Every structure is written in C-alpha cells, then in structure tokens.
Length: 55
Image (tube, rainbow, N blue to C red):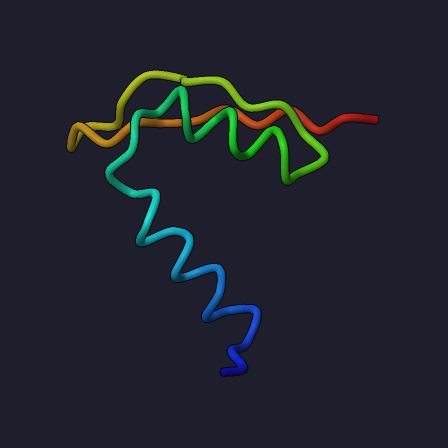
C-alpha cells in the first residue's frame, strides 16, 4: 500500500498524540535535525514542546 507523506505524518501524529511528552521529544530528536524539550502546557492542558534547530 502506498501513502502520501502527509498521510504518513498524520498517522504518526495520531499514534503519538497520547504518549508521554518526554518520549515524544525523544522520538522527535531521533528523526529531526533539532532538539526537543517539554515546555509546559497550553490553556487546554495540551503539552507544549520547544524545538531548537541544530546548526
């Protein structure tokens, strides 16, 4: 089965939306050229993540 890049990203987001924020940051650090750390929560209680680009 072939899927588009957007569909793949949506599947990953749906899968990871309920995981621990620190685990999500660990995964993001491995697949993106940036570092990620938990940065609190928004007004609705959703976790915020800070992304710092690696130069």
